[in-house]
Amino acid sequence: MAAALLVAGQAPTEKAGAARFAPIDAAALQGFKLFDLGVADANDDGHLDVFTTNHKYDSRLLLGDGAGGLSESLVPLGLSPTQAFPGYEALLREPVTSAPGLYLFATDRDAPRDPFHIRATSVPAAGNLIFEARDLHFESVTGGVASTKILPDGSSQVAFDLDAGGSIDLSVEHIDLPVTVHVDAPTDPAQVHVGADAVSATSRDFVLSLRDRHGFGFADYDADGLTDLFITTGGLGGEILDPFFTGRQADELLLTRPGGYATATAQSGLLKGACRGRGVNVADFNGDGGLDLLEACDLAPPQLYSGNGHGAFTQTSAPQAVADTYRAVDLLGDRRPEVVAAVGDQVQVWRNSDGAWALAQQVRSLNAETPVQHLALGDYDNDGDLDVFAAAGGGNTMLIDVNGKLRRRTPQKLGLPTQGTFAASFVDYDNDGDLDLDLLPQGLFEATSRGFHRTGRLGYGPLAGGRIGYGATSWPDLNEDGRRDPISARGRGEFSAEQLVDLRINHGRSGHWLEVDLTGPAANAQAIGASVRVRTAAGWTYGWVGQSDDSRYSSGHYRLYFGLGKERRIEKLQVTWPDGSTRTLRGLRGDRIKRIAYARVR
Image (cartoon, rainbow, N blue to C red; front, side, top):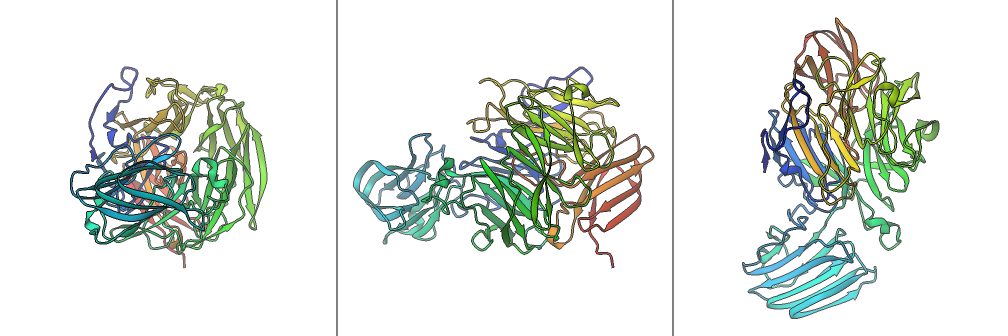
């Protein structure tokens, strides 16, 4: 399915003469129970892509063509939860079962258990299935027999023998855990059809999995120059803490290979344990040159995995912060990121020294009793370090980096809303050289010499079903014209069945611009931890790899953006790589995407 540049539906509310943000058809992203929305260059073609995570339902990966077009590519890249059976996760559809064969598929129901179905059309079939669950019930058995027994490890085995036309409907707790399938001879594997799309098997023995996917972490984890993917999975509604379930749910490591992703979780060293995974921050936290993974765990401290640069990880000590959200931010400018964590009504800064994490600072935030929903990063005051905007429904907080410490500023004094914000992105939407702020649902706020003023542009309208309680925003340049394009999702809550997705193309007036894609050293191809500063006749502007990544739970948007205003010529561009080495370019022209590769200093 392709999402073309198509103006559709009601135009966003804007003042006369204001920037025009033309809607794109977002149907390809409008999936059931959308949990996260983000941006990455997933296939390394230099064009930005858009993805969603949708728990155990159909997630999305739309590859960009650089002209504003997006095409669904999750299945061709092998990103289906069960790669051999794409469509097994389409729980809201049932297969057409008219052709002869054995059909196995799951559907959706909120309570009390998840349905699974076995159908024998025009042929008899027998076999067994093993569910990694204890609570399993037959709801109907027609035209055959079925039995269940508990295996020594506590799993439930279902044996079935169906006549032609027979069927079994059963329900089981946590259908997203693996289901091991064996079909008896003489049934031909080609007559075994799985999932909503009735994909044929190639063997009588296979495993089905529905992954409760929450956060995507795109980066090169095995130093082959290709972007891989780490996926955080949930905690079975909290039941992962039950000793029976601990160890049965796994996160995912998918390495890019010819033809798509290959599963590498088993040998990766990633041990999920009882972590109810939420999001992932990708960074070099220990300064060894390899990329590490900080996995957020709901109602518990995060887990930190140190990468060796060859696709393997070792769990190591992590900040002991039970936070609502985390961001990796280099506050000191030493290329060793701190972890900024929103904990209750505090924003905490955790710093790593010789492998030990310590609380370096905590600042009282203004969110009252509501959780901070997002930490947006940007150099608001253009002084060469990153500042933080903490968005929360109960109260927003601006935190300015002053010599490595965060200092609180009241949003009202800066011309910003004091509360009611569920997502935020720093963005120079008109490339005038000043960093503006997009707030959901309030819209765009233009930077001024004293703070911000509300533009009235890009207002996010109300929901038909009630008040907004969740949001996500991001600003990629989808059509590579230098003007960043807003994408967003909003809903009543983060677990709501429906989120309203908006994709828009920025057709407004624009100053000159520069976008930078960095290719880092072998163990850090995305150059995470690098920074770039650009000088024109108007002065310096600054950027950091990852600062524009405003996905709530994912990582992958590593492009840097610079608004140049009236200046097209760049006098000097300096890259500071993650290892501290620098590269300087002079006399560049603007209005283009500049790609810069790391070169070791000899």
